[in-house]
Amino acid sequence: MKKILFSVFLAALSAGTMLAQERPTAFVNARIIPIVGPAIEQGILLVRNGKIVAVGDARTVRLSSDVNIIDVRQKVIMPGLVDTHSHIGGGSGGDASSPIQPDVRLMVGLNVRSSSLQRAQSGGITTVNVMPGSGHLDSGQTLYIKLRDNAGKVDDLFIYDKEGKYMGGIKFANGTNPIRAGGGTFPGTRAKSAALVRDQFIKAQDYRDKIKKAGSDTTKLPARDLAMEALVEVLDKKRVVHFHTHRHDDIMTAIRLHKEFGFRMVLQHVSEAWKVADEIAKANVPASIIFIDSPGGKLETMDIDFRNGAALEKAGAVTGFHTDDGITDSRWFLRSGGLAVRAGMSREKALYALTMANAIMLDLQDRVGSLEAGKDADFIVLSGDPLSVYTNVLETWVEGKKVFDRSDPKDFLLQVGGNGATNDDVLHSDCFDGDLGGAN
Figure 1 (cartoon, rainbow, N blue to C red):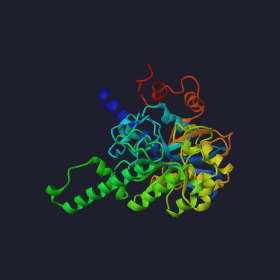
Figure 2: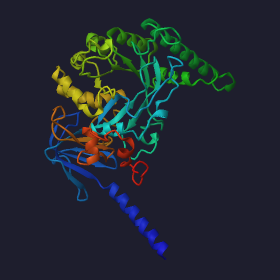
Figure 3: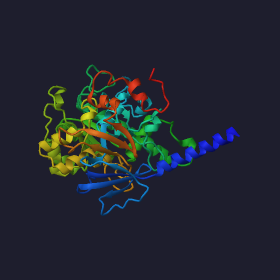
Figure 4: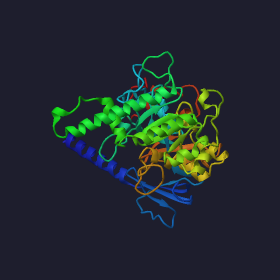
């Protein structure tokens, strides 16, 4: 009898939990910046089951009696930030065996319990393109992730496409990073770098042609080649190339390769974009730029200019920002927008570059990047204007669940730094209900 009563109790508890999850939540009285339209004063953001139900004000959004109300007056709400280029999670890509390794998958080496993921949450970042390094012409496949809590394995962070496949791009690079003097398989010059990449794409075209000619006759199929399979996905526009490039001549090399082989591409870094902004726009290639606000670094970034964003906006190119964390700390990602506006970029495009433009670059524009009904409930609560140096990220929400809260002492430590702020085990264990693996 006791077992029966306990089972009934568990069933009731489970049903109550389900009902609680289905209960809509309304964030009211905030200044809402939806990105795709004008700001809404005294706005209402209504979410349910991890999705945005409605965005508006009291005249356009009607709330039922069962809605959970959260008053966020004198605060600002905007979409969760999207980072198109980051190295959080400590993942690595190709090794020293060859300069082009498209078969390497960064997902294999990503540490989901790294405190760097939570540090990104504290900066308001909710969606990330995690990349392997740039010491290769192609260092492997990138991974698009959501910064959810309770991730016991990397699969829990995956973003899946409509076919049920986890999403990601592929990392290419040119310039000084993949050039290695002394011979061997790595290139020693910029010209040889481009030649090696062209050679691999020609091999991939041949591999694809053999598969097509074989048809249903499996005896005529070429031997399976994981590297070629990844490059065929690139040629078939199923996988986006994220191209690390800095100097104006390297940018033009990437654009020429893009035109020759017809792959989709996002230009990453583009320190000298201001020199060839019209060419980037003419090629209809998105550019994700970085702000390096300290002197030094590699020689090819000597001519980096804060006016990059303004120049690309004027040319009409789709422009986003990224952290390249840890080049720019994820906690200060919003600052990129402020620096761009200070150098002449419009406020609207700077905010767009932190959110919607980056979503477009990751093929996620239907799910993230703006506050619209039907999209994922990824948003941040700010203490003030997003481009003000005095503003703090107060809360970060992913799919309707709070993953960062500045009022929590451990989250506060992650955001501001200090003793213990990078302790992966102790800090990240708080995100796992009932998991005491790192608490002892």
